[in-house]
Amino acid sequence: MEKRYKVLRTIGKIYKILGVIAAVLTILSALGICVASILGGAALNQYAREFGGMPVPMASKAGGAVAGVIGALFLSLYGGMIAISLYGLGEGVDLIIALEENTRKTTELLEESDTSA
Image 1 (cartoon, rainbow, N blue to C red):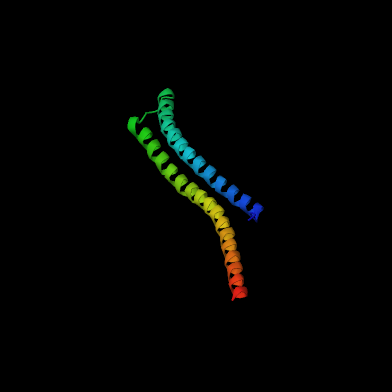
Image 2 (tube, helix red, strand yellow):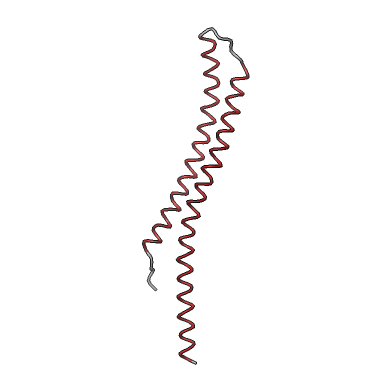
């Protein structure tokens, strides 16, 4: 039996690939936000020392880390929802194709049983 709906199958695969790419980019971005915010807190402390300000030893590092974790958490939630939605859309296309194929097979079997009876 030949495969029908080649374009729809391709669209489903594209959505699945985009979902995986979105998940990977979300993870990398969340890690990047954490690292950048921790390093940014340390850099602010260094600038405060250089320009005669009063450095706050733990507050800037801890504040940067907390801000980075919160930012990474929100990015993970948002990016995760996008990734799941894209992948689910690809699965939905596959589901609709499978539903059509099963309905067509059932119809053919019912027609064969009606003609043989």
